[in-house]
Image (cartoon, rainbow, N blue to C red; front, side, top):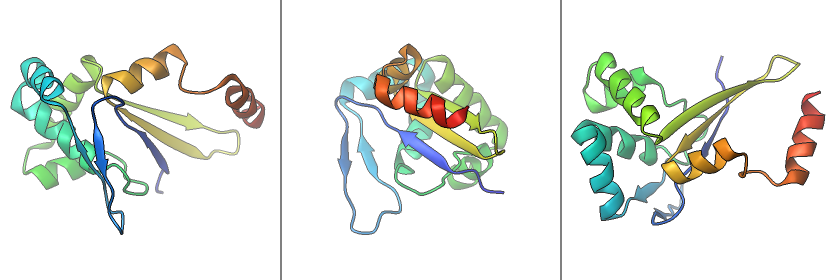
Length: 137
């Protein structure tokens, strides 16, 4: 069973290059963001992060370790270690919401700014938050 996904991207110095037929978007990090990511996780962290960003706009992409390992030619364990590193430094976060009717929605947050906003609860207006809470109860 496929789990629908929602992707929220890094805000700030990123640019998305639109395509006529979306199979994914291309997000460019600033040189400062790139060097910060490489200094914290090395090349593998940067490559995996770029891979995840390249999947922005792909409908229902699950960001699984297996698909990333196949695409990058890495072992699944290397992708897991690197993904956990991205989580620990605040560049990657996934949450799964389970609704009363057993539907599941997985939301993926990419980039430190959007994750920080999400964790502070600022990514939804109060009106939208109340509406979502009413829909779930």
